[in-house]
Image 1 (cartoon, rainbow, N blue to C red):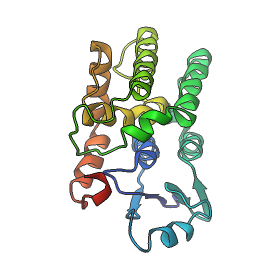
Image 2: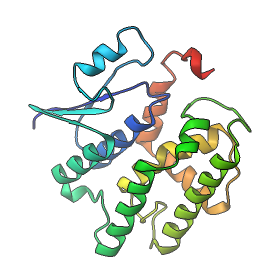
Image 3: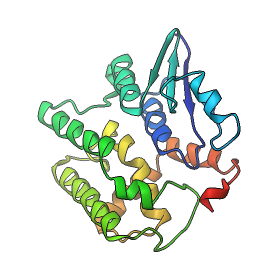
Image 4: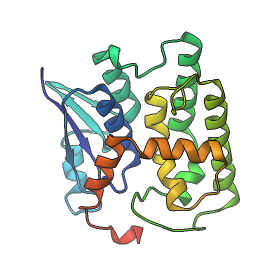
Length: 214
């Protein structure tokens, strides 16, 4: 099979890169990641060489280059339909796509005030009313999905693209010590127990801390 190569930003900080990485890992297919380090003098030049939109992640599959986390996840789902990256049930699949779209386009206060730092610990930082309101909405989504799920610890029972999209939020909640209900705590633990998540975090430990994130 033609090699799958995922270009990502720093694993400690790049929430958008984590999402397709987890989706790819869930397929069981072989792939490689290549890190483009952020906040370096040549960062923008290196990214523009693979994506004229100037963003990571980017998936290379032969002559095809796919950018945008959701587009990559959708492509991976089509490559590996047996991986179950969307729920099999039509209604559940519609709900999964709806919450992924909400995550993909929304929650600006969380992104601004609680930026991803996978290895950081900043209790209370970023707890603005707007960010906490968005955190409450995230937990509402999780509770509603888990109440409908039949078996399995993830939003739709087994791991799907929806879990890949909310995985970076679980890191924000732990980094910034956001108060969570029991359902949310269990969900965060399940996501962060994934071997693929742990492998990503292990790689992040070998990266330098960026000054702007201290």
